[in-house]
Length: 135
Length: 448
Image (tube, rainbow over all chains, first blue to last red; front, side, top):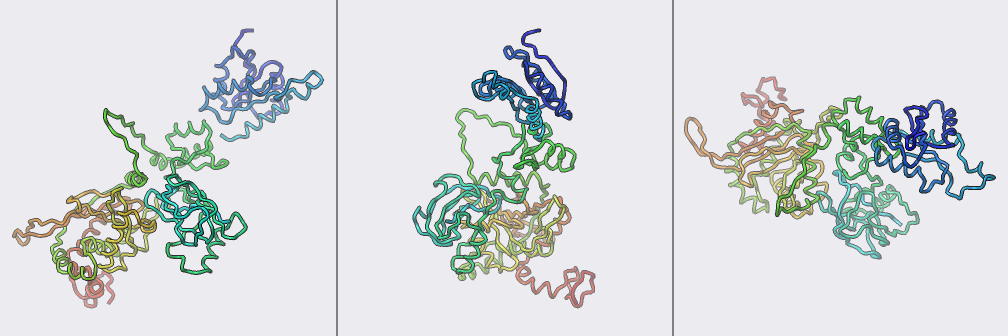
């Protein structure tokens, strides 16, 4: 597996969904819940070095982005990626880029984990929200 | 408590600079009192309050900019409700007395932006337009000024689909035409000086650019023998003086214009290009271009057709001195239907005046000069007035302009005709034979 090279999970035209690790699978499941959305799913694999080209090219095509990660929201990688998109693909944006992340708390012990992790329904909900915004 | 807001005082004015408050917080104020003087792009407007009461709070400080809809003052008028309805207020004031109507009441406008979409798009350039980055890019790719696009999204946001629709509709061309031309940046050389232009200058810039961009101007230049008029004026100048009237050529020029407009009403109209209609104006309100230290101001004389020559002369005098002192009231600038500009005051002979949108014509008068003229194969000296008539060629053809000019010259050539035309029109037929109407058998529809 090359370092710093993203994997194109699925090609699409409506929205770019960026995830990595365990959440890639959740995103794929989520897309079954919203069959009318033609999403492009990117598995980033590594966040540093980051495959900027893959992100920017995809956003230029779709104009809409959702970033999903398990880490806490504040100062997380999603913020970093959205900054990158604003810098390099601003005029292509059709809706505000959004992120679906963990809560801003200390990550709970395994017993509380089910309340913390992101499930496909949440992802599908966010995707619908973004798609509902008319450019 | 009554919140007194800066109302939309018309003429597309959206903001003004507060020059001076006449009252302080805590002062008692009566309905009709001038609360504040506001400098707008055109006039210094004195803003009267619609209620009696005590001032609790004043709006922006002197020297600051106030926008339409912002609160100028909070007045304790004894009512409880904080959001007094403007309709109720005007009802009250009507019932109370008429004495407060001296200054002229202003309607309290709750609307921040003028309802006419044309106005709100053409002015107020600083207004923000909501749109996504992608919509903005699309607009700039299409060469459309996004400010001129009507948004259908939340809060008037311009959607991509609005622009795409625009691309299909023929309206696109109109918008492309109206978009601001890109002007190259002006570079400074060593020692050059930069100065901000006044609000009055800004409004002149806007009006002139608009006029030249959308109206195809045509100018007809002609000369006119006004010897009789010069004699007539010299004879009656002294008489007029005893009545306190300064009888200028301007009064004759205006009077004659009003007469001619009655014959050719299309010169007293506006062209509504959206509905493709000509709006014939009922009143003849003739604007006069006044040169003031701050720039050009065009007040107009209302219902000229009803005024006598002396009344017109007085009105010209009054309006031009008011304009020079910047004390003119807004209504005296609004609703003009045609304009006269006198560049003869600067010894100029001819010029090409610019129409004041939405009017369709403007008449320029040059300096009246003695000139040699051939009459009956002899050279004689006559007083000659140069005339320039600029009109909107979209609705007025060159031939119409020529006919208008001929009729106009007829009136100025013979001042008696100008004054007696009431008699003339009823007795003599307009046709060439010059018979009395009841003897004439022409087909011009003379009432017998």
